[in-house]
Image 1 (cartoon, rainbow, N blue to C red):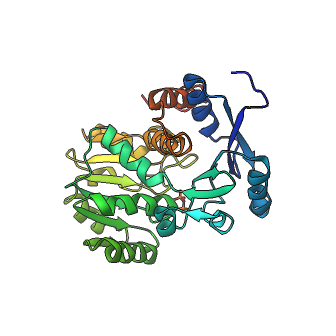
Image 2 (tube, rainbow, N blue to C red):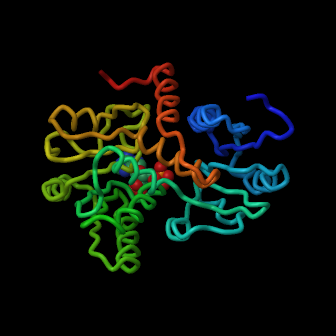
Amino acid sequence: MEISGKTKVFCVIGDPIEHSLSPIMHNAAFRHLKIDAVYLAFKVGAKMLEDAVKGIRSFGIYGVNVTTPHKTAITNYIDESDSVVKFVGAVNTVLNSEGNLVGFNTDGIGALRALEENGVKTKGKKFLLLGAGGAGRAIAFQLAQEADELVILNRDVAKARLLADALRKRFNKEIFADSPSRDVLKNWIGNVDVLINATSVGMHPNEEQTPVEKGLLKPELTVMDIVYNPIETRLLKDAKSIGAKVIYGTEMLVFQGAASFEIWFKRPAPVKVMREAIFEKLQTGGLSLGR
Ligand code: ATR
């Protein structure tokens, strides 16, 4: 697609941003659907966020993804937020609707779609969620509406408790919170169907780390990791080796991106094309499935 005066501009803002896979994924989608648009990455330091948002308005940038360190701070500069953002306090997608900047958070929807598209129904299932940071809160918000039971474990247990209290009030459902000690993990893993790691444990360069030791996993579990670098984390490797079903972090990456695309274009995202684009990039970038 030739870039012209009519080409719509999209971008991701964050710092660091050089390794973001969003430009790869969205430009592949634009090319595939012959949409006259381009998606760029802008390195925006913490102090420049307010100016960057002015730039989004003045340049008429159509859609923006927001990543570290701006996901929370950007709520101060946009015009509207959807219900997920209001609860989670973090934005990863902005729609510029004729100058009105609307914030969304697609992390939770992305995680749920990753589960569903990989054959895991959320309704009626018991979930153990590790992590109560930005991504953890977004995932918990979706799970609390769908799951039969939700347990949230976080190193900083006060964060897990605050989150569980807020969800309990909002959805009138029993939601448990605790710290991820060995005994607590052992007890809950014995009781749940799906384990989701929404912490950064195991992420490059700490590939040898895992949030749950192998001996505590069971073959009946589905294990999903939101970490995608490496694609196959130690947690997923361990889970796979004992016969558990695994869902890679790349799935959540693809589906949160697909949800952003669908907010901007109000049409289904070409998920397969987006997935292929990031896999190709990750594999040529030296990341592997560990097989
Ligand atoms: P994100 O937006 O990716 O969720 P975040 O908000 O910084 O990032 O959250 C990171 C999550 O990983 C938190 O749940 C954090 O636990 P704390 O709230 O206790 O900090 C968790 N995390 C990061 N490093 C960890 C570690 N070494 N051990 C256990 N949990 C860790």
